[in-house]
Length: 359
Image (cartoon, rainbow, N blue to C red):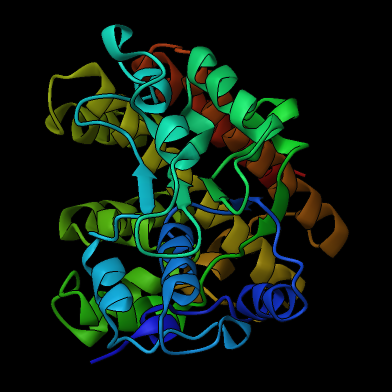
């Protein structure tokens, strides 16, 4: 049975950074763990707390024994000196009640109150805030007061995928630790270990397309979504490229995902992502970069053969196509109609490709 850091894939540099800080007695009181969604930041925070709570190993080694009472409690999520704040079911933001209690118990409940209490069994209290970048304004201001005067010996770990969404005053009071994406081999192993992928072959295909995020990989485990990705790749590489038919097929898939507007926007975002994946892979192939994803070289060659002969000109064309896809994501984020966003995207991709081929 794996214990401690063995349960985490990657992030050796971040582990060593904390290990050095603890061994030198320089552990701070507030850290911001930032990086892509689904790379293990929340698990990192939990294991770090387990290391600091461990009753057997010296904290300087930052390695939990996995067998003492404190280690078992933290692994089970029941340690009395560890608090976790995360999105409540059905909510898309962290609420002020989670930090300072409901109106009738304001200041007597919530994370800030719990963090100020004397530890029950350890020598410190530790709190983690998952999706910290989703705090509403009131919650962020409530937390700020605790960050300005943190309780002695406490440790606060903020986990965020988009640090830019945090108040600058909160970021300035935290030491930022950046996490990168997982490599495809680690993702593939995790997909098999967790049973998300049905086979090693499926795991490899998903891992190659998820940009190092287990959260993205979990969604791509849907075989239908992966089939739509392959079909879109074929459509974008086809000669001639039929923009109207492609847009119609994409919209049919989006509408089949369900009638809920949020679900349809999420599925539209996937098709935009697939377009971005395709053109990036073509650009990497043209540039001679060692490919890390599941690019089909015949598709890349098919598209490249229709672009200007000069390498620099062809690269510029693909760069322009990528820029247009990025604009589509911005349009979707700004609540443009899904249908209009998709139709205009594929129409522009077709127009730009035909213009390049005519050179």
